Amino acid sequence: MKLATWNVNSLKVRLPQVLQWLESSPVDVLCLQETKLTDDKFPMAEIEAAGYQVAFTGQKTYNGVAILSRHPMTDVVKNNPLFEDEQQRIISATIEGIRIVCAYVPNGQAVGSDKYDYKLRWLDALARWLSDELKAAPALALLGDYNIAPADADVHDPAAWAGQVLCSDAERAAFERLVALGLKDAFRLFAQADKLYSWWDYRQMAFRRNMGLRIDHILLSPPLAARCTGCEIDKLPRKWEQPSDHTPVVATLAT
DNA sequence: ATGGCCTCGGTTCGAGGA
Image (tube, rainbow, N blue to C red):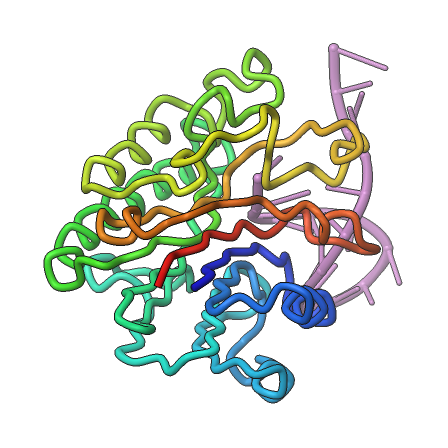
C-alpha cells in the first residue's frame, strides 16, 4: 500500500501532471494540497477515469485539498471540527482501515505576523483534534504540506533560515507536538541521503542549485509506522515543464 | 543591497505563496 502527498499549486494547471505521475506511480492514496478550485470546478471525471475515487473541499483562488484513492473511502470529514475556519485546508477519510488526514498547514508569511499567529493557532487545534482522532482511529496517517522544516537537516542553508518562518522554534515545537502524539515522520524512519527536499523556490534557479526545504511530510501512527517499509521523495515532477514548486512524497506500507 | 517566480482574479498590477 502506497500513500503519497503533493502540493500541486493549482490543480487546474497541474491536472495533466497529476495524471501523468499516477500513470507511472499508481499509488493507492494521493493527498493533494493547494488545488485552488471551487468544488464545482473540481476535475472529478478526469480523475475517476484514471481509476481513483476522490474527496475534496475547495474555495476560490486559495487553499483547497483533495484525497484520491484507488479503494473505497468512508467517513469523509472536511476541516477540523475543533477549529472554525473559512479556509479549506483539511480533508480526511477512512481507506482500507486507515484514517487518512490530508492537511495544508498555513504558510505563516513571516514570524510575528497575523498569518503566523493563525498558523500556530491552527496547528494547536490540529494537535488537539488528532489527539482525539487517534483514540478512535489508531491507524492514522497525516499527510500534507506542513510548511515546517522540522530540523536543520531539512534546510539547504540553516544559517540563512534560522528563526525564519517555516523554521522557527514555535513552528518546530508544533511539529514535535504532533510527534509527541505518537506520530512518526516516515521519511526519518529510514537512512536517507543528505540534502533531500520537497520544495524549491521558483526563483534563483533554486531547484537546479538544490536550494530547498523538506516541508511536505507523512506522519504515521505507531501501527502504521510498524508497517512502513520505505519513504521517498520523488523529484521527477519538479523537473517537468511548468512544475509545481513542491514534489511528491511517497510512503510504502506492508499489507 | 535588492530581488529574482508562479498563480489567480481581473485587468496589464497586487496578493499570496514559501
